[in-house]
Length: 474
Ligand code: HEM
Image (cartoon, rainbow, N blue to C red; front, side):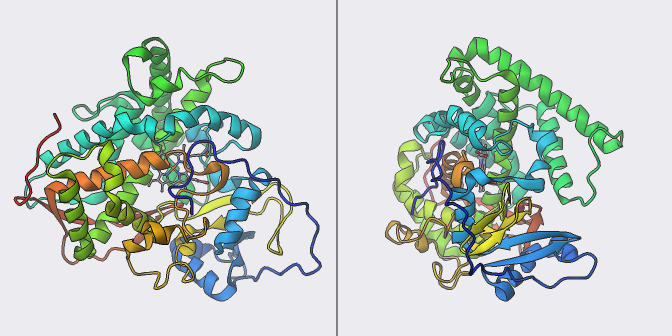
């Protein structure tokens, strides 16, 4: 298995097989639903259960209705992989992904497809290679140490809020060299507003166009203006002062295409917005890792032992990452149980046939890694949290489609190395210095925010460790 998933410019999908309809084409089972609204209510309020039920009753693929609209739900890894990878040129993001357009911009990687996507991805990819990210590790660790210093013994906090603040500060510094630690910045508030609006839009049934003068729309438009002005200011500034900076924007303004042209300002603007949004996924995923570690003290003890042995009291650095192997296994296993982008969406741009099933042009197809990662064939006793499933020799035996929290095909997360590295460093730094436990009496269940999974209002208590010799970053 390729792990972590390939970054940057993934291999070209092989040409899709010619469409010769099979006489034996298989019917896609229909999942039962109400006469008028179909499965709308379950889709909105019990989506994970709905997906589990579809797998149980329909098998690897089933059709639901959201109101009058038929939607295919694929619970098979191999069908999903064929659609995302082999048929990458025959699909687009469909209506769900297009909802993001007013916020991330129409040139965002997530919205581009085919040659335009390939071209832009190729230009951005070098800045996301693992080695390129090495000089960000110190920021990741330093900002975590600052957060830890601010926490008092016995303090309880909302894990998602703390992790979101931390990952946002890290992306602010690494992407545009803005230090949010000591200032509340206008940009920060505006970005928060924009991200919140994406969540709102994707969970609303009725989409009110942004041009309508509702109070919410006015606030969002104001936020987008702030982001626009700030981004364009930073891009122009960085074209002049990139030599003095080490942020990602400084490398992006120096990129040239095959004709020697730089990435234009509008394109860079949309790229910054899309890349920035990645911090939210990392924060959600850290929340799940802390939840699982707190519930499994024996796993936490193994992580602590690894961290103490490998680091010997020093803060973690890039060169320690390969040795923090068990920590990485924990992170991968938590992404298996809680892939924070718990469903991927595509719509075929022509009629397709995969493994005998006909997927009609224009009909939305949803693929939930949350369900696919629980396939007993590859992960026996799938609900059990067992990081040893990702021991290198066991991981190698998994097919590529068994575990894909970063997606598959040309749209595979470009920030996957960034995210894994950041998670490994944050977990190691916190475990090295803190005792962490869940606040008693909490009922934690996955809260579904359209495409993301959040541990609902998870509260943790921290205590600084007295038993580990530690030193600050110089
Ligand atoms: C644990 C953390 C993360 C997870 C689980 C995650 C997951 C994903 C997934 C599943 C996709 C593919 C979506 C699709 O095919 O529809 C994606 C795309 C993307 N991610 Fe991430 N992501 C994470 C962190 C990040 C970070 C830290 C960044 C930036 C530094 C980032 C930047 C992007 C971008 C730019 C895309 C669009 C790629 C394209 O369309 O070519 N992500 N992510």
